[in-house]
Length: 460
Image (cartoon, rainbow, N blue to C red; front, side, top):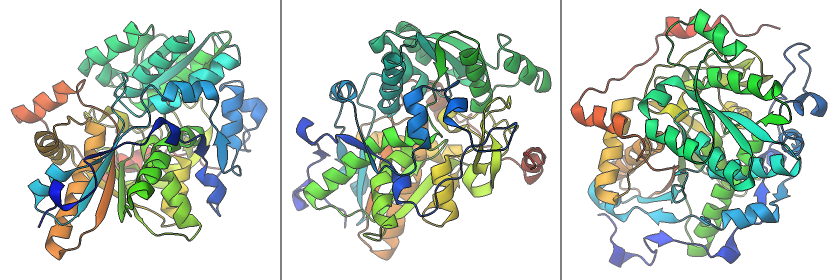
């Protein structure tokens, strides 16, 4: 039933040439009839202005964040030159996984782990570091969950000779010391969050003694550090629309590879924490759907321990636990929700991209939450047959790609599935050890736990 190398003219790895590297990012908001709701000033509850946001973010990045209408934004040449070190990235046909599953489905994955940072995060990190350098800044601050974003930003800042201060979620800081050391090797200062080095961190520690932290906590500390340090700005690795814009390079390359070989995807799957990877992968395909040119099934996959889409509220909420950031309308579990210390650190965020939230609310995409042990079972199966050790975050997408392929086995439908493999899992061996030892557990928050957080959502 399954395909083999000899029954198809599709190569195992599909590479675009450097000449085929996209020259502009795609802004899916331009094709959305209902634009994402504006981010609000928490004091006035009015849409944030350029002047307000530029105190925290780089000027050019603020312009990109507020631009709902420009469909294509040219990529500056220095960023293109940097991209050429590792882009275009390959679109890989998972022939061995297809054979293992004995499915008529055709499975492809876009692999973003073929760079030193080990993940897709470098696509936006280099852009944000470039704009910071162009503005004449001395440095930037940020947060990181599992460490992929912090690693990518430290690498980009090293390239552009910028100082970089990373607040790393405490449980990941302790679980992944090697990821931390990569950041330090590139010159970044790394602080476990929440810490006692900021006012926000001290408030969080007082309210949640012994907490293992969250991305919301780390964001609060990084923003405070930025606004209290001269000639420094805050940069963010997910959630914001500007990050989705930069990550569209993933989807644009995938779309180009599909057109080159006549591949028509039926299902496109991505893991979802804040939304950077998923929004980037689906962006140009979603544009086709919004314009009425094609129809796809888009599936966002999130951890059952932090189910923003599947159990969250679509409401305005703070982007951070310390309530120093603007309010965004998004699917959220509440900014006071502290996820369990699961191993998919990059997916431990209480909210979701405003772009993806609006598309999900409109029914343009689906979402599913999966438990951690099933995710690692899929990761192990994939690694054993495809020879690629996936990051825990990416493995959420692998889980659902396998599930969809097995559905095809039952129905006999030869659907084409594409999923995003956002990075490698070589810094996640503590998690793999726990799974292999049988000590990994699943945690699903109760309705009562979520309701306590929902009760604290801003009311206005």
